Length: 143
Image (cartoon, rainbow, N blue to C red; front, side, top):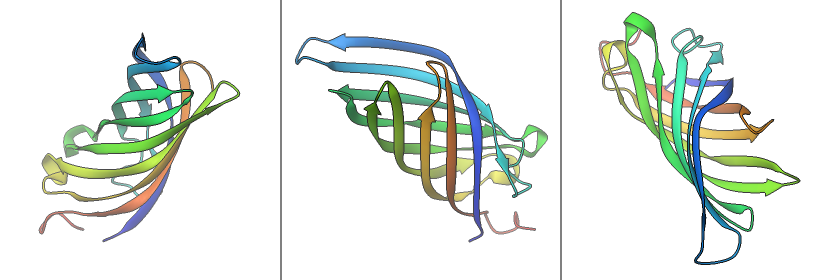
């Protein structure tokens, strides 16, 4: 399984939030984020990533879970899931957790693997993400 790492700067393209009334300071939101992958691995470098996350916060701490997909043009796409812990401090939200591939199309059909990530909001609509992990392509896809 090749190891790889990378980053992307993303922008929240759609977001909806609600304040829950079950307890004080309980908020939930769903957001769509888009960005471009930067990595030394040619298979992923320049790929257009989108992810959709659901965040559940109580007093500025909580969880985020969701789905991601990376478009690789005519080579196909990969997709998977993620989950992380959220901490909000001084108005800045940080999410740290794990991700895993659940499949792909084209050259990425049969893809498996996963790793860890850290995302930090740098403004109300911008974020920075760094990630690392390992992957394995289906037999006949490597090379």
